[in-house]
Image 1 (tube, rainbow over the protein chains, first blue to last red):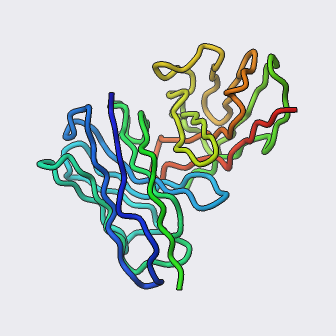
Image 2 (cartoon, rainbow over the protein chains, first blue to last red; image 1 turned 90 degrees about the vertical axis):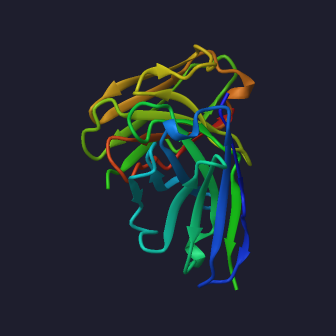
Length: 120
Length: 107
């Protein structure tokens, strides 16, 4: 049973940085694409970034391109999201999600999420 | 980006009812559509993938259909645990976009 647990959320000022972590267990970490998806208060989910199974391909939503970086440490079974130059509109719960193993974006499981608040 | 539009935004129903939620894509996405259920303060949960395939462990009263640009999620014989918000999501191309959600309320 795949388990994903996010951490690293908190309150940060506009223009600041934060790094989120997602600890994975229960599956072969290097065999699946992984995502970050966020959800602003009262809104639907918004896909943020994808890292493919071998870590060689990354894709980002236009809203975060150039500011956020997705990466992983396979020795620690951990996915990261480095967030720089944060804006108030980045305030959201950030979820880590794992693909089912089929086409990219076919999510199979979600973590419980971590809250990021960007405010002065 | 592909836009996903759900209807209705809110749906009131009673335990035992059968309800249908519609999701329309702004362009054809084949069958690359998932449905997720979310309860307040919790992460989404995958119900259906590839338009009509039930995720393991999801009750058979949930069913999905459609292809191209129009899709439906049907919940038969509503149970108290089913009152939640439902989102469709396309994954034919990034950005993988979600619908705005349908809140299923108890009548």
